Length: 153
Image 1: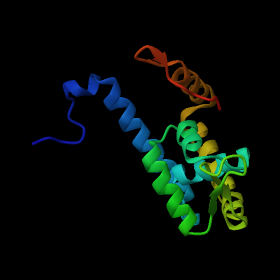
Image 2: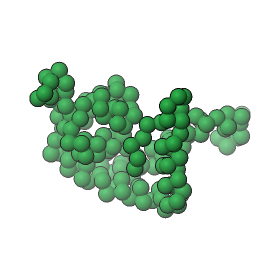
Image 3: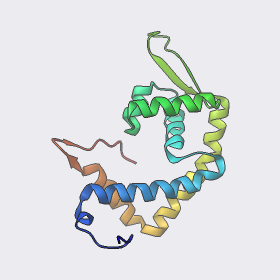
């Protein structure tokens, strides 16, 4: 019978190690944001919209490295819940722009301190130098012919 801690050859798989770490970190951030009803991907979407003052689904998906269809679905839920609006671009009516509503901006403002707490706790648990080294190392990872795309911190 397989146990959760049983060593396996697949433990040497880089993809498996990254996926496992990613899921654990995601759960860590989700737990911090739970009291405001957000997951980390939703928070990052609100934060990106707040910083950029609006964006298209494609631009958000590319910036956050989320599949376009998944981003479209998430934005639909955020719109349904009153946190974003989707309207035609004044420059090109075929393009739809997503913007935060006042309620979305208030939700982001309530969630931001929880996210900062998660950032600080993650750093406390793992060490400031280790966390900085981790982010730098992830920015430098090459997958295929191109480096992984990252915007920095």
